[in-house]
Length: 344
Image (cartoon, helix red, strand yellow):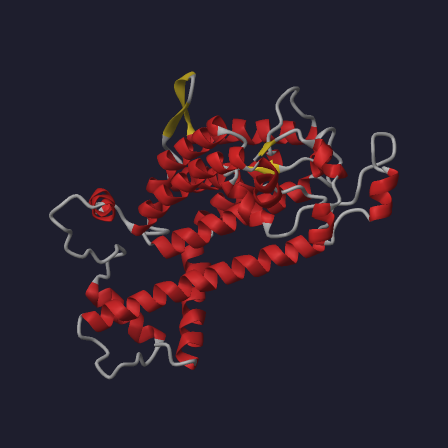
């Protein structure tokens, strides 16, 4: 996450009222945390609980949507004629036998030019996960315009300041960017690595699964940056007063997942000649982020905590098989709840 140097936001009491975090109004008035007076405390417990609750909700919500679609596909093929699914295992068996394809049902397109129809034609050859990547990319670029129209409101709702921001900005800050160049770099990186990760055996083009991973990676990357501000670092601790925004935490999660999927590949860096093995590149990147976190680079204000957290999340999700240990249990739990309320 690019850390914009708007430290004056630390003196505004409004975010404190919204989140209930940070110093008291008396502290704000006296300015006891200005240079020489110490730094305000960073809330940890409530953002952590919120992050886990939000991630669980996202995974279960995406899993419920995925289960519902599988049931509809099975019924469309003439299975489960009695109107109900006996068990989750029966649904999985029907899905395997039917070779369910994770792509939206295409309706006949009108012969004359029609914007939704033309968009559908362009996206017809892509999986749901790839369409989702393009949608997130368009949202990232689109919000750059919104930030210029209403910068105050944009910073309040799409930037996360560890000391003062409400918990929900752990999620929304991944869609905000500090300008077109920032958004363009993150979007380009996402479009390069995201589709290959989405097509891997971990996601298999499943848009619901990919959405759960994408949003959860953004939340925990923001939380990782929040945790990093309480470490005994040289300069990063001051980021508790600075708004952070951007999708780079998610991009680094994609990079971690891609590198784990392709350990023998080689990759290049924009504007730097040559290519490097994944092992050498990842080692250099981790050392760069650690140095930036604990020592700091002059004139470079990167979200090193978010980057390191994203890398670790992407690596762990692939290495420990998140599909088997998180996604499938979430689907099974969602099916049980939907079965209980007679939705399937």
